[in-house]
Image (tube, rainbow, N blue to C red; front, top):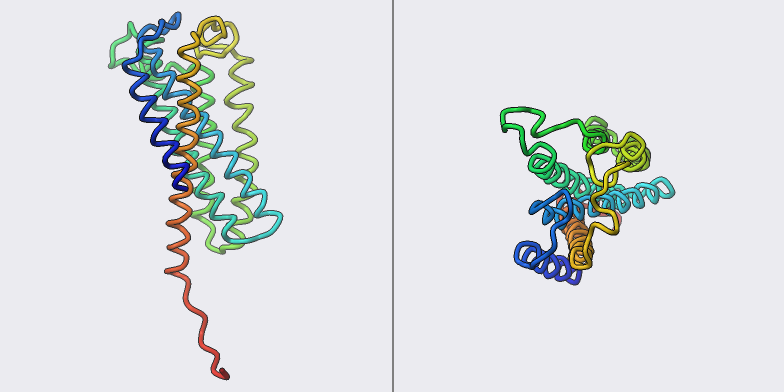
Length: 235
């Protein structure tokens, strides 16, 4: 846990310095906003990584129903949703100053243009977050854990077509969509790439570190709230 914390803290600190002060060539079509590449995109990488971690523990729970496995999956989903929200918010700010720079702040289209990638990302995040509503509304612990594991696996699988395949098929303004030139290999310099990959490592490590912290907190809570075994009267 300490190693992951050191990696995430050191890497993200370095990325913050490099992202704001290191001279970089401009990415075509993005201007000065290209620095958000080092925050918005790695946050989505961290979300996917934590979704994968939560998926793994949900699958393991279905193989053997141990309460700790359900707890590991739940905490992974919490951190995944956290980074998903951050990724969506940084994406909204980015689109505001690139796609809708000529629109006034009072125009809703300036903040949300219904681009397919942006819209499907919101749908995927809302669908994934319904996992917590499911958990909250089922009181019986074993049933809650089992149904939550099944839903978590299904929701994680559906996130992939919603955020990758459908936006590419429909096209749009978002980089990576069909016909959009930004973020192709020829558009990003080597300097952008090594800072970007460092940011991905840093944010994924931060997500795992936060997950480990929440797991420890949940374990302590379980120890404090679980009643002790009654003493054996025949002892």
